[in-house]
Length: 335
Image 1 (cartoon, helix red, strand yellow):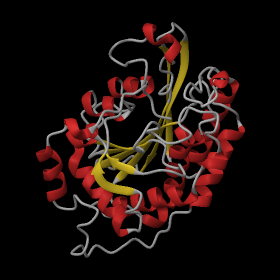
Image 2 (tube, one colour):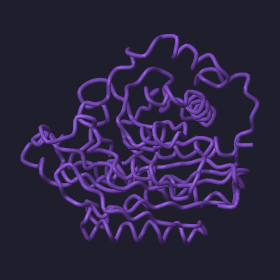
Image 3 (cartoon, helix red, strand yellow):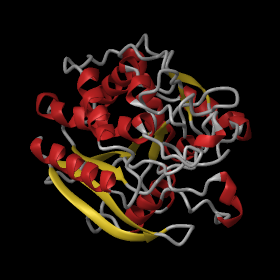
């Protein structure tokens, strides 16, 4: 799902002392777990359940803004969260895209224990990119992306976590937000029309950051899930996350190590992503990290990113399991 063109840059641009500080504080490193005595939660994430939710979203077709598949999938997500007993509201906004099109956007917010003042935010984007402009077959570049990983995977993980909250009994309120209109950035053949500041991407999250669903909304921190079901997934420290929320990233990586997902959450430098966590950090002021693949080589975000191969057949339940269980552990440890 993610966004940009080559907007991931090397973390070599980050000062070495920044990463040293991250790895040296508290639970900053996935290897520094031998002295941690925090009990692991007995609540088990079900990757098969998350995968079923991913498939259900893809069954509607590519969820390109303004399409019937987009409308029907949004209704489905709303219904799923409501069926789990969460308080659900929608932000509907007509957003003008870089090409002049007006996107009838729907941010979906599902709240667990909305009465609690102390809250955490878990988010993703849910719509599909209109162009598979990174597909190996250039004749398919104007086809839409099914977005099983780049969109639907984050929703699948969040809905499964929401299902498990009554058993987990967290001590904080949780807001799940499905952002719309994230992946509508200009394709390469229209690059000259794209705004130089990258605001053709992440339109739904930017709207929410400027107009939160609740006046004066605050959260302890946020976690963005972006492409969290890939067969080749490998999550490294992302640069914007380190700048604004190093301790949050350190905690999640530590939880992943203790729940058996240290091979997915690798304690090393990644890149910089222009993603939905940027407006949450820079506009809303919520320290938010991005759980996003970082792979060496040409296909930084994974083999299926912005291709016609981003389908449920290429989703890994092992990846979903690792991400979901790490998140459950982190939520369980909130005081």
